[in-house]
Amino acid sequence: MDLSTWTARPLPQRQTLAGRYCCLEPFSPAHEAALFVVSMAGDAEARHRWLFEGVSDADAFHDWFAAKCAQSDPLYFAVIDQASGAVTGRQCFMRIDAANGVIEIGSILWGMPMARTRLATEALYLFARHVFEDLGYRRFEWKCNNENEPSKRAALRFGFTYEGLFRQHMVQKGKNRDTAWFSINDGEWPEISAAIFPRVGPPPGSSSPTERRSSCARAAAPFTGCIWTAPNSIPSPSTPAPPGCCASPCS
Image 1 (cartoon, rainbow, N blue to C red):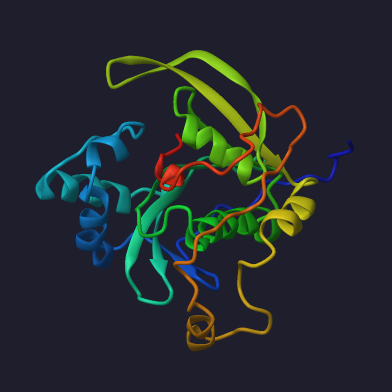
Image 2: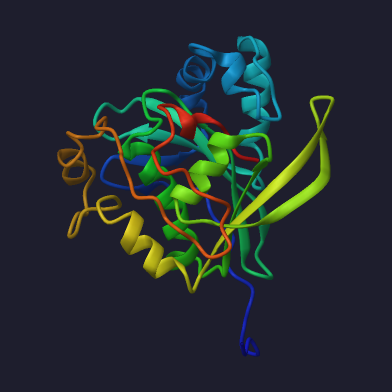
């Protein structure tokens, strides 16, 4: 592979990424209250098990949120349901290596209203599409605690290739963390995009928010998806994971 003409890639910016069913908006104070409700609703302890932060009250969440708003790596986005305008989750770009064209999606918390729906699928797609097609990166990564089986299943379902295990990689919340690594490379993206994400993304010819919202009536329809068999992948389940599996965060 000749990379003699390779140059560093642009950094992701604070810009909205819009699709048919959801849009991703860079964190702003307008998202804080709704995201707190989504993050702490229901079984918050289970939802935060794999995240680096824990369940918090409104004051602690405010401090966490304010710190994330000020950062550029990780660069956080709120997931907005195009049909209702509601904040339904969050995700971020992290470990951004523009010199080598490598970037990771992480700190995912997809609330139950969007988990296992087209919103979750499209939220992942919008990141991947931006990474490969707009910014020209070579590698898109997904990492998670090796004990987080739902996250590993989600990575495979979204087309990532399992690359191996970093043993004793971190100490997280007072426990050892072995980290499972997954990736999609730029050469794989066209096939993965066509196979797994054919019905998400900006509608053809759509240019205005009104046009995008008009195509969102099925935003809450369950996504049954295909099981992608990637080279060197860990075994993929033969049936879809139970509802809410994509709410189990990676990284």
